[in-house]
Length: 429
Ligand code: GLN
Image (tube, rainbow, N blue to C red; front, side, top):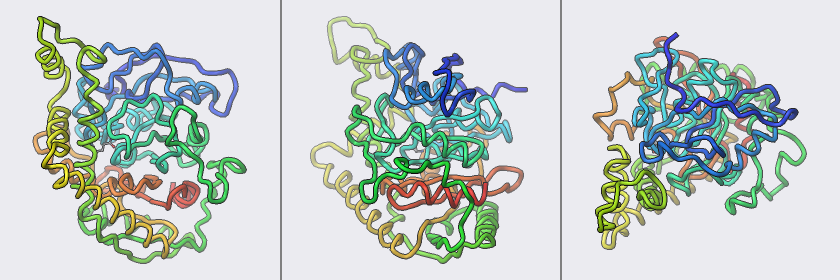
């Protein structure tokens, strides 16, 4: 069998002897810190970086008895939709090795799909768990912002991202979420839903895997279906018919502000990235460019050599969007669009319990196809980024195949509505 290049580093770390994940192997995305095991973020900049501590989620995996089998390949610093921007070469899609596995958590998804790990952790800033889950035919959950600790996750865009589970089935993904979810004193943005007590205090997410969608009201945002390829939408409507046959009803709804979501997402993500990635200067973090008396030159050399093209593009655009004089024109407008979008989702959830759409509007691209054309690649995120902008939970479950390739169905819930999306997803996969 061909090596899919799903891992940057293969190294076994045994967890506790007992626990809910005893006997399970887990691939950990390479932007999640692992004590004593290299954490490269798919970048030459961090090729030799070995964290001195574990991310909270890694500590929780170990406590739960899981065995880590390696660090999964990814787009450099999470910036991409195909895992091709990795400095360590692309990961191949196990369903068709001429195609991408999706990104940026492509190594995590491919490892699970090819049975190189039972489970995986990914991170999702604008779709990086759901996109590769869809392209590789596995399940991925992007949790509500604040449900899972980001301590030890190398930041790309803090206000958007969450770590989440990837697995062959909804049940296994839910069980992994049970292990990693919950407040962490090291991440002040973590919290439980306080409205009616957090579900995991009495029940588990795995308990929600009962396939019971009787009476569930599903909204289908017209804007998220219209632009998708025909092969994708056919599979999507078939899956929706299955949910209907199981007792759910559906109606079309509108999220008018999603038309600005991709632009808003990229302005915000790049702005936050330009600030987050300032620490990689070869002195504080990252490979050094050498010093011959001028710090500006030393930083510039380290950053020119250490970062790939896509990362540089985003740092430049993000710095520009935040600069005096342009801040109001770009960053502020993007924040406004983010607020409108949140309002659209709130209104939709007054009518329906969950929203359904294709996870990705396209089938997995051929390797090399999208690298030359960043704007087209950004547009492929149209259905996933609105969820991050609104800080909501969403799951991608396999909906079936089109042209022999996996298609994902995305279910989005209200804040802390993980149980609802897990229950609905479990009726399908
Ligand atoms: N494709 C999106 C981006 O490039 C999402 C990445 C992610 O979720 N990390 O920013």
